[in-house]
Amino acid sequence: GNSVTQMEGPVTLSEEAFLTINCTYTATGYPSLFWYVQYPGEGLQLLLKATKADDKGSNKGFEATYRKETTSFHLEKGSVQVSDSAVYFCALRPQGAQKLVFGQGTRLTINP
Amino acid sequence: ETGVTQTPRHLVMGMTNKKSLKCEQHLGHNAMYWYKQSAKKPLELMFVYSLEERVENNSVPSRFSPECPNSSHLFLHLHTLQPEDSALYLCASSQDWGQDYEKLFFGSGTQLSVL
Image 1 (spheres, chains in turn orange, brown):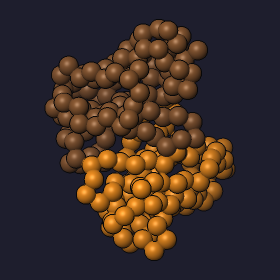
Image 2 (cartoon, rainbow over the protein chains, first blue to last red):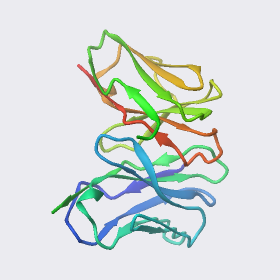
Image 3 (cartoon, each protein chain N blue to C red):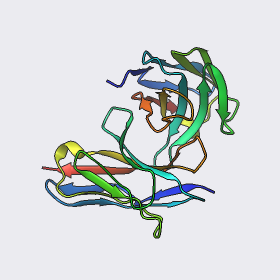
Image 4 (cartoon, helix red, strand yellow):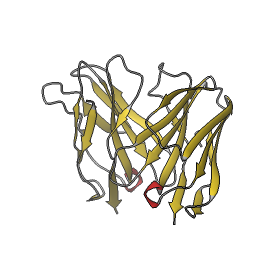
């Protein structure tokens, strides 16, 4: 079946640190891949996406590259800010399907 | 503000109570969704409505009963819940079911506690 596995949180970093949140997936065919972010007290919002192998999605300084060979879509940011504190969800949309499959979320806290 | 409003923000209920969660969107979207967010578990899709018709029901227990009276409103009626139903319930909408589906607009959720 289709599934998404994220690194276990919570993750705590200092401001300006380098961030990686790991995400791996299981899916048949060629899924589309997404990262969503949930800021405190808010709903999820789309952060970035990639629809085919080797695509790089980017937004707000975050990047993730669709790696088919390792079935991964790790989220990275070179220098995090306190305002990046949130829960991050990795998700996939199976090829030809209409549903999104989410991971369990990774809580990120950035300390000043 | 994403345009999707959920009420109440917090709800505490006993196992014998009946309550309803409300979701409202004025984005002109045709599809609306209920998700359940539990700690350390993947976000679970519960129900999908497209043009006021239910198109997805992901093996959700009958103690959860959705209602979509029009394209702007979605309800989740709750009765005889269990403590394991305690979670954040998120409503979302999108322009259409299946197209640009990833462009979901989420509400802030209702934090439900079942005692």
